[in-house]
Image 1 (cartoon, one colour):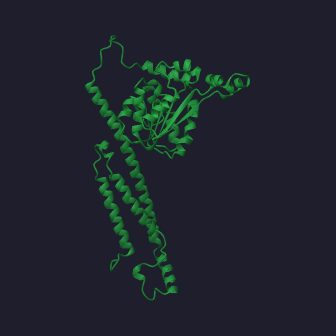
Image 2 (cartoon, helix red, strand yellow):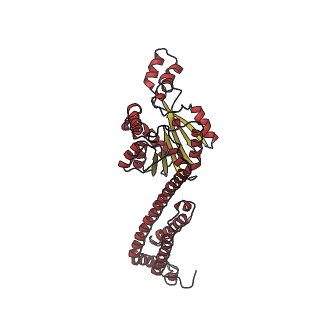
Image 3 (cartoon, helix red, strand yellow):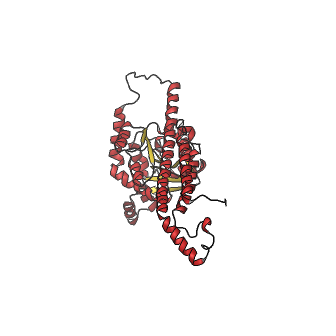
Length: 372
């Protein structure tokens, strides 16, 4: 203990000076090259310093349980006198403690702003890396000359066609929203608050649900029509190639990656690389949710699956479960979805074997839920 410890006001002033110095050091950090800063620990260091300041401010905002050292001398060391002196000291410093408490709340706000800035920097880094890769790809890849010179490489009518097709055969936005709500308790129980990435976000139903649940999320969508629909709702969405965006995402970045009815659009081995990249970009303990049609349902495999001409081939759940474990996922669960249970029960009651009833009216889809 120093011979002449600083007074309470002097100590507070010194603490404020340290906070200002730390803030100036943080603001002086370069804001360019965000992708490089993903590995930078400067923001984490600043957060650690603020945690220390908050603990000290919280301590100083509370009434003292004993007198400062400089007052611990006769006669203030006598029991009754000491109690009275302590009450008087706390009364005289009440206003100062209130100011310290306000300072503590202000510093918490600074801490929250730092965290939001770091999240935004990480997301911007992902977008910058994706754009850089796309520009390099465009500079080195020559587009083959089409045999139909007047046919555009991207036809907006195709976008319109697939949007209408989804509305007709997959379901209305409200139906899709209601179906996706089954995942909210899973995400909540896993303690997931972002960052989250929805691959092939479509009309943004899942992004809407995550926003309402307080999960920081963004989506990637290749259809310009669906991208515009998400943008009109104020959702954070990038228009681009899903697989390319996933490949450019940094390792161990996302806490949650979802892909609803995407993987069946990928051929072999593209869907294997897709699963491998999802595992790579997830944080340790992160979660992947991959929903796809269930070919164990004969009606789905023989009819419904082929209503989308962009589907490549269905994936039986044992194959997808095996692949998830092969690429490194620790725990894997299969969640059956969208069964016509009442019809199957009636058929079984009428004497139809359970296996046949389930193969016709069992789960139309399933979800693979995997943890890294």
